[in-house]
Length: 152
Image 1: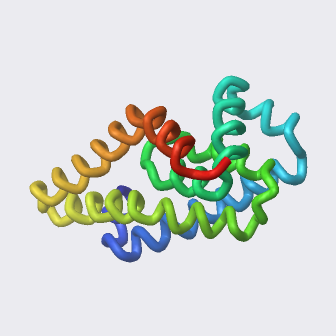
Image 2: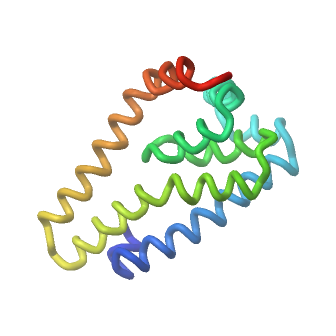
């Protein structure tokens, strides 16, 4: 939201996406360079095992889905994803594409707040919060759906 507030919706989204993409690439690279012991020192073991299984079972689609749902622990996903065989460039592209809608919504909310357009700010913020809450609450159901519909 800060990017949208300071630079407007478009530039705020672009600047935020540049920053998050660089940060994601660094996290992917760190986990590749230092391996599993490094990642385990940064991430809760239970969370890591859950993501390990999900990502191993569904590969790129699961990484995309996790990044698409706002509010999920993206940083943890970056570190765990970096341990997979998915090429680094593909991980960066998946993260960039999947994160863009949430960052756009947040930037639009920030831009609306800066322009004192409180109704728009409320709508954008509500959509962002609801999608985060629903995605988090329905993650198990989404995972079950993927288990049934995607090949292992």
